[in-house]
Length: 267
Length: 371
Image (cartoon, rainbow over the protein chains, first blue to last red):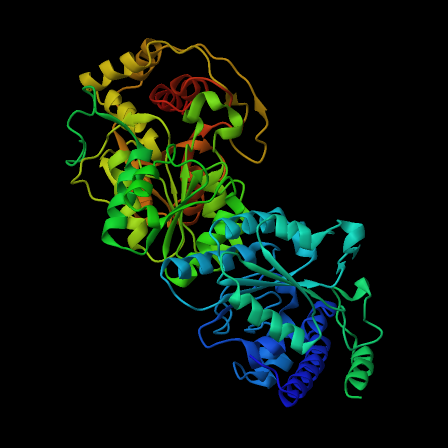
């Protein structure tokens, strides 16, 4: 999975295009979440344009960041880009405000109520392990989501069954709706907690393509344990007035703000 | 009018007793033998839920979840998405009681082929008390789109329902109980999802029952018809009942509960019924709460003009709710509910509780006296 300079530059360019589309989609929708999708654009890009093998499966557990998924899938050819840009959260759309299983081929689970995607990913990984299937199951999660007890039930279970074919990537952006995670419900020492639950933990800069690619490669090489990649990201990444502001967790840019955001991203 | 052909011939002569959960256990082993995609998940209750037989026979397909019902619902959904046929087993108060959101989103909205087995349902779980008595599960499950809801009447029917659930593609909720209850049907009795069975034809009242209380409905109906064996059974099972909890108002929006004690004895109620003349009751085994067999219910209600619903569940939202919703649309009919009177239960022996909270054959008769 080595990343050449040329490939890295291409991925960074793609991630920027996806960020722009996220802004366009949210402004058109008039509702939705901004900070998380922008923060996860690099990881989604790396997954769909470099890391994922054909049979690998992706579960999203924090469904509210789905605009980044839809935008990435559009760029990867799973739906027309015009549909992504024009139909998010609209009546009759395949692009529901929170993902609907099967509305697009790669969407394997409904998500939104937090903590549910991880259990479903665990179920998929377990079934694959029972049948000796070789594909990797990825699950994308948020840090605020860790407040849900269900996530820790799933962690206990995945460690028990040694689901090394499961890799979770947790968006550690330090914000949730009401504020900073360490104010709302402290998670630290988060990596230690995951290790204590029997997981192999890798911490990365979630905006560094090499980090992302290397971590996912390392995850495949880990046996006996499921792997958690804690990806430190900047919420609202790429748009200065959104970055690190929890107020942007759950709202879209206005038309004017979208223009300003796109101007920054197109620099 | 008479009983259907395929019923246990010993219905009122010391019928065989077996817990419905045994039917689940046997059904799982048979389903697992037929289809290698069947997997069983259980939350630290393998013996109680009767998942044990499957776990022993197919250890590689049995998944011990620990006490984690929310995770179980999700893991089951994920396995179903992969292609497995998971049976997620726990007590009904925990699954779907505790993990209803996961059941709603991961399983029902996700349209995943998961079978949710709710064990120890009803007040008859007994001494464990109110926390463990699932009396709301039919209501919370039948409101979920995509969800099928099965509530079989005896051990044999529970086995058939388990096999039918395995063969059906889509989310299913299967409810069963802890206690030994009379075996009503036979191995040859038909079972078809969504098809209610008329176990006794009659013309004066339709008793629509679900779960093991179907036996109480049959007992009441045959007593009304003067079946000597049934009357002897009634008196043997219920020598004397003196009090029950009842709602002060069963109709309309106000369901304010009060504990009303009324004196009662089988001899007294029988005398009262005799004064009113013979009554020919139709008994319908409504083993599928969703999709409800509206056609069978409407035909019966048109014939009799009076319905009694009998369920080991709150009188709101379960079988009575389903029947009322259907009949209000297609053939408005008076419905007298027999079930848990908008109340939590308490500790006690199963039969004591069923009597106290008014769900036994004498109370079905009482409902007819008071009609």
